[in-house]
Image (tube, rainbow, N blue to C red):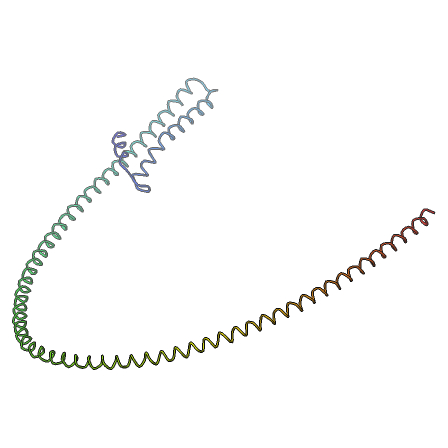
Length: 271
């Protein structure tokens, strides 16, 4: 029984399921057995003062109870393991049924898909044939239309060539007339520009003369102003030196007066 339960417990289980609870109960068996042995030792200590025969009877009774309790627990664990095994078997059977159902559905879908693909392929071939026929008709119509337009264009081309030749001759005569007028107008412009350039040259020369005269006048005015400023600076410098000399003499007088006053005050303090 324990071997079968261990085989069931070796399978992966999720937390909170019956298998997990069964595993927890199996893990509690050693602790329960240890607790029973501890109780037995405590009873032996408590019965130490009793007669040996009485102690042996009580120990045998306790061992019988412990064996019965372990047998009942093992039987309960075996039943739980059996139910868990049946549940796992039912789950496997259900999964196999689901797999078979999915395989059948996949086959049905695959057959439907293949039939749809074949239908689409046949429809595409029919559509390609219709498109090919329509394209051939369109190409033939375009070819006939192009031939018709080419004949018309050749007819119109001769008329256009004659008209263009006449227009070219007329434009050549007009260009020659325009060239003659342009040459005459250019000569007039050149003469007018020469006269204007001469006027501008004269104006520039007169402007240069006026500028030279103005520059000379400005230079003389600047020299006069510089002389006046130099004289004023010299006068200001001499006045500043006089004032500085006066201030120095006044400072020396003040210092001598202060020294005299200190010299008078010192003998009075000593007295």
